[in-house]
Image (cartoon, rainbow, N blue to C red; front, side, top):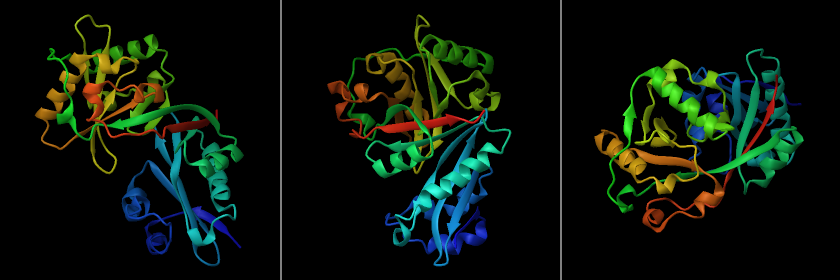
Length: 286
C-alpha cells in the first residue's frame, strides 16, 4: 500500500535513508532548508518499505509554479512512483485558486523525465542553455564604456517591460534556472528594487543583473536579444559589477542553443561548455 502526503521536518530521517544514487544530493542535504522555505512544498510517496519518492512545487509570483526536487529511491524505481507523486502534486496545485501556470524544467538528455512529463500532459514550450562564466578573467574584448545604470523602481520596470515587448519575450528568467511565462505582474516592486539595470547609449538595449544562489553565488544576467556577445559595453558593465561586489559571483546567462554553439573566440575560455539544453514544459491551470 502506498500513501502520498506533504512532508515536514519530522520526515528528515526517512529522507536521509533514501538511496537516490546521486553523490552529494542537494535535495537530501538541503531538505531542512527546503522545508522551511514558505514558497516550497515537498511531498513524499510512502510504501511499506519506506520513502520511495520525493518531489515538490516551488511557487513564484503571478500564480506560477515549478515542479521539481524529484528524487526516487533506486531500490523502488520503475514502479510508476514518480508519475503517481507528480500527479498528486498537480492535482494539489489545480485546487489552489492562486495558481495559474505549472511548469517543469529538465535536461534534454533526461529522457525518463520527459516521458513522465508527457504522461502528465505537460507541453514542451521552449529550451535554453544556462551558460556559466567560470573564468571571467579569460575574456578578452575591446575596451568599451560600460552601460549606464537605470535608477528608480519605475524607470527600471518601464525599461524591462519595453524590452520584453520589443523582443516578444515568452519566458522571463525570474530566477536562475527558473524561467516562467512573462507577464508585467511578476515585476513587483520588491523584486525590481533588487535588480541592477543598465542601458546602452542610444537606449536600444538594456541588461539586468540579479544576484541569486543556486549552490553558488550567481550574478544572473538578464538580456533578451540574440546579440549578447556583440555588446562590449554590456560586458564592461558586468565586469564592473563583479569587481565592486564583495562576493565571489559567477556570471550566469540564459541563451538559445544556437547562441551557445556560436560563442565568439574572445569568450570561449570563459564559459563552461554545455551542450545539454534545459527544456521548459508547462500547462496553464487557469
